[in-house]
Amino acid sequence: MADAVGNKASKDYGVGVPPPDSGGFPIKGAGHLDWGMQHRLAQMFSPASGNTVMLAFDHGYIMGPTSGLERLDLVIPPLAPYVNVLMGTRGAFKTCVPPTVQKPICLRSTYDTSVLFEDMTVGGGIAIDMENAVAMDAVAVAVQTFIGSAGEARSLELLARTVDAGTKAGIPTLGVVAVGKDMARTEQFFLLATRMLAENGAHVVKSYYCDGFEHVTHACPVPIVIAGGKKLPESEALTMAYRAINEGARGVDMGRNIFQADDPNAMAQAVGKVVHEAFTDKRAYEFYLDVKS
Image (cartoon, rainbow, N blue to C red; front, side, top):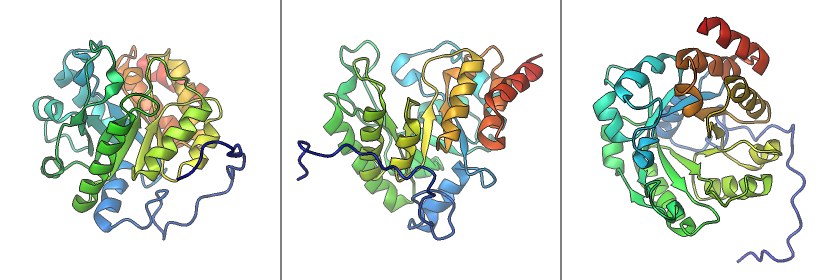
């Protein structure tokens, strides 16, 4: 077992050095996966840019009705044309997203305690098994993890069990780094958390943007997509997306910064310009204002 005492601080992240060739498959760390896994990942990430815009609307599973998501059926389908992947719970998809909406879906596959619970980081359990994920035609399943909290061991077990089941079904696992109220959003934390999720089998990792993010993306052997986090002014959210993409993120998984924007449709399109078309944040914000008007 590795000893944490006496380790040398990491310093050489190979920034600027491309990852090893994935046998012609363009997604980092996925070159040795089977055809079904690769086929689903290829639906998540644009073949042109290699990146993805995911729309997260799973907030209600712990928060109840969230501002902007009071009526999922009225909000989510109109946004679908502007994103690559829809991320939500099976209940939300079955009741509020018509099956004629032709977008890949990522299912939240674990449940957690509500915002009313004293310690949300204790973790939960499996919310949907892999057989049902296959029946819903999911391209990925998402597992929340609580690194550095009371729920760490439990959530890592759920992640590993989901990866095992997904491997048999050909469905990739998205490992989600949860940040509790007492956790520092530092480079050191995200270096640890993202690497732990990847080494426990996650095929894609969702994390937050931080100072030193370029080190985080280079040290993680699978693609990282950033979480949008709390609602920011539209210009600031686009700047965060721009910086993350330029520092190695392979996409964004935004929720509130899209559906709580003054114009959600315009914001979803502007985020796509940054992620897929190399727009600067300034140019994307000008685009947002033009579309909004």
